[in-house]
Length: 131
Image 1 (cartoon, rainbow, N blue to C red):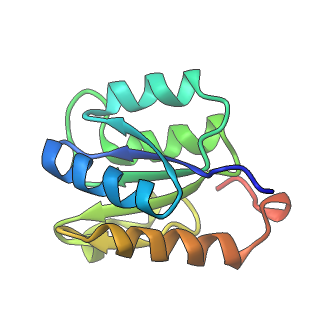
Image 2: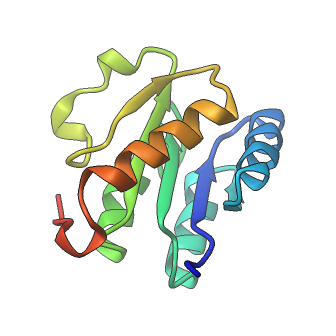
């Protein structure tokens, strides 16, 4: 039996975090929640098994959502990343990690679940490369 996938959700809006976490749990994922980049970094440094990062590309602050994604790939080279944002098509390609899709906010939890499924089927974990 495979282990439950762990998803770190970085979203500044508390309602978005809770609704998405509940949706992820319904689909069998473990949701780790962060309200800002600093909290997400603490989780990434403390947790050995974060499989997916869902990060708000619009999140500013001391540590923004784009910076968290790059740091996550350094700490966990095989982590899948999904960007969320009000205008995902405006996120500059050089600012993103390789192979990370974008989704427009607001989104539904099942959209995130679908993206995770697609990412997991794309390339086996053993073959994933660092961006």
